[in-house]
Length: 205
Image (cartoon, rainbow, N blue to C red):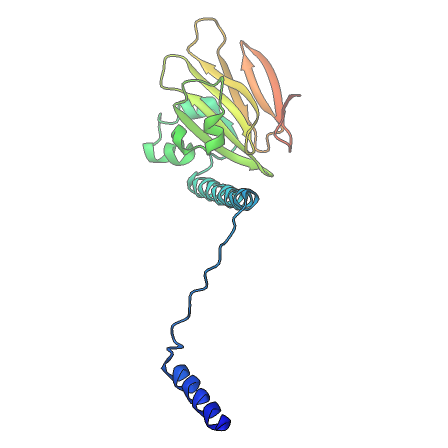
């Protein structure tokens, strides 16, 4: 009798198991506890990832910009640039002295040229190591000014090298030789010479 009763119970359990749908997992009711520290840690990781992504985007943007900027070949003589259209075609002058709008500058340089106002054109000169060299030109007004700027993620140094049309007798011409060993500035027939070192600092010779 006991054996018969045991057989009936086993058969009932077997039937119940066969009718169960094992393809549908059973939900387990369990509370997940999220602490303040967990939230702060996740936020910190997210911010760090965003910073890295933004830094990469900026680097790529600057890289793309630098790829399209043609360099003005040295030596660069102010009088040659000003008088280029005399006896030359416009195409020749644009190729010899390519200039760009202020918007073509790397973001940090455009953002930090404090003290250099009314920039009309930008010249990209050959770099020294990782130091980029630019001339920021104000040449759409009666008084023209040309400022040389050395740059590596921020402005390293700057110097007013050319000026014309002033009323205070402060006009100056400049000549920049091939390797920046001599930037010659002629101010009222008084010549001063400067150079740019490998770190981008401009110093008097």
